[in-house]
Each structure stands twice: as C-alpha cells, then as structure tokens.
Image (cartoon, rainbow, N blue to C red; front, side, top):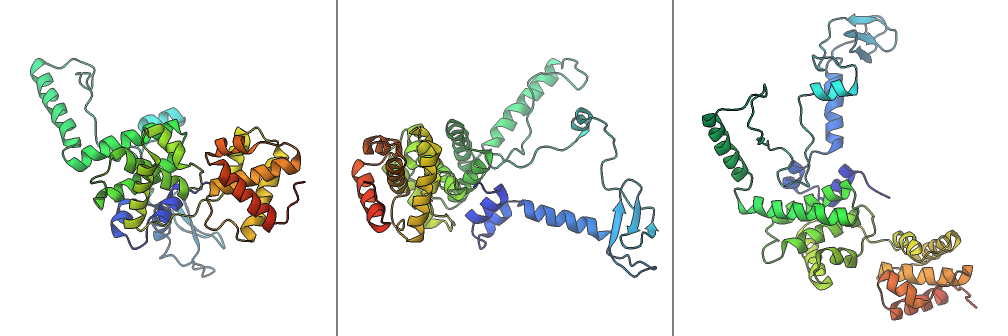
Length: 342
C-alpha cells in the first residue's frame, strides 16, 4: 500500500507546524484553488429562464451556458489558457514557457537557473573575448550563490546522498520526497549538529519508508551507508523525539512477501503466513514484538503446515534476526493460536 505524495507529507507533518505547511504546496490545495478559479466566472450568473446557478464554461467557444436548460448567457468569456496552439506533444513541449515542479529532493528545490558553458549567443554565434570573460564571472558567482550558507552546503551533500541511497535501494520518488521534507525539518530544528549527514538522511529515509508502508529494515539501509545500526537507530530516535511526526507502526505482513520471495516459498505458504499473522493481530499477539521476528515465525509455521519446510536458520538469516527470536515467536503462535504442527 503506497500513499500519494501529498497524503504522505500530510501524514508526516503535524497540522500545527506552520513552517512546513508553508514549505509544502499540497496537491489538494492546488486542486481547490483551480476549482475556485473556474467557478469564479460563473458565480454571478443566474439563469433568467429556469433560475439555476449551475453554469458551464465552454472554453473553446468562449460561452457561458446554463447546465439545466442550455441557455447561453455570454459568448465573450476570457480564455485563461496559453495564446499559442500545438497539434502534437513535441510542439506542446517546445512552446511551453514554464519550468518543472518543485523537487524537495534537490537542495535548491529545482528552482535555480543554470548558465551554460557553450559560450554562444541565442543565434549560435561565438561570443567575443570580453563578453566571454563577463559570462565566466557571472557563471562563477552564480555557482557560489547556490551554496552561500552552511545550511545550503549541508543540503547539497545530504540530497546527493539521498539520491544515491534511494537508487541503490530502489526507493520510489514519492518516498524520496517525503524523506527530503523530514530532513529539511530536522535541519531547521538544528538536529543535525553533532550527527553525521549520512546518519540523519538515512534516518529520514527509513521514517519515510514507514510512512509509505514500504518494508525497509534498518539493516538494509545500514548496508548502503556503512554505518552501524546503533548509530542509525540513535538518529531515528532523535528525529522522533524532537519532531512532531506521525509515523505508523510497522506491519509484519508487509515483510511476508519479501521474505517469501527470498526463500523461494510457494504461493500457498505465503498466503498461509499472512492468514496466521492476521489472526495473531486479531488476538493482539503482535503488540510490542519485532515485526521481522513475527513475520519470520509465521513463515516458519506456514512452511511446516504447507509442506514447503524451511529451517529456522534459513528464515533467521533471511529476516536478519536470531534463531532464538524465531523459535520464541513460533512457540507463542503455536500455543496462543492453537496450531498443530505435528
């Protein structure tokens, strides 16, 4: 289950945090604004024939038409679209004069300009030596102004590492955006002081995966950044302590498909493990337990019941837990759920 980017950012950030609400333009707000702009031109119309206030604007003809009876009230409405026409997608892309949307996973949000290094003018002619020296100075200062403060330099390094880690872990773009917002919020609160940039950006990425219900254990992220699990967990706890974030609990069912694929389990064994975990959740056996350990124990029970048996050692290595954890969770499930494995 993946959340939409705007929904995930809303779930992460508190409604009382005005700084981050100013920082994020949610899609729902944009839709509401567009709806208001569209309805603004028809709010003053009341149909003289049927008394209805529901109007339809035909932007092609420039007419305001009553939706109930079809009476045309005006034929001179203003078209707020572009003044140019395009008949193919290539023409449309070539004639657009706007940039891309804001990208929070870039340190400058994708809004800064870039001065090219071609040293030619708009017609393709080479610049003179005087003009070329002037452009060189402008290019140099334009690059310097991008990272003029310590926070900007911190963000430049952090966002580069975020792209590297997320690409190695195959993290979707929506999760990357959410993790960038969490890191920016931590940077504003000065939580990065005394901590490594790698540890804080990895902690933000882990929490963003939790928000989007994407199973990524701490160990997987540690493998990509080469820091200890203890250091990463300290950064995670630091962010949760000082930032008002709404992080959902990890669901052990989310790990079943992943561990099942790595263990080459048949589909019926995976389905049986999910059924066992759902029953365990109904009886509140998963509260306070490591979700990876619960998923590993459910897979072990399901492998016995379906005949596709896997050893506790294989499952423990796949789930990156100890055999003792698998054995203890297995005994609890068998006892509390009345499962016969003989």
